[in-house]
Image (cartoon, rainbow, N blue to C red; front, side, top):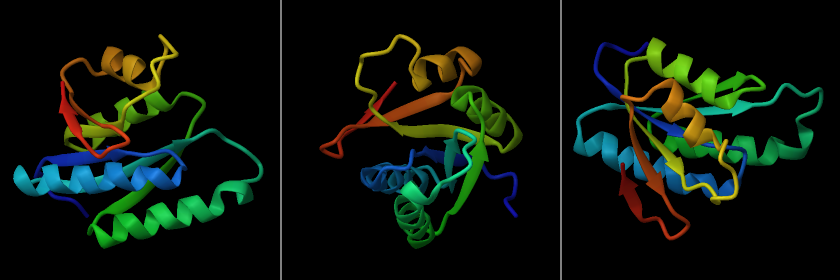
Length: 131
């Protein structure tokens, strides 16, 4: 169980390269003396076997970083994440940079739901950008 210490939340999808997000979030959590949490929000489906290897890999990456990995199921990832942030004393989130193709991206929706939340983004080259 987590205490009242603030947490850094790594927001990941079911892609192998999301390990860079967990690694960056771990670094920030250590620098800021925060807990590390990992979250993925998945659309409700009847069959997850196609992504089971990716999910297992990211779960192992989270464990190696001494973090738990929480799975939520929702059609609206931003709203589910905003609720999780509110309920779990999240200080900052770390996410991957979106491709810029959507005005309704996860991060746009999340910052609308939680405008005071600090967000750091990790690009494909593992560089961290703070907003």
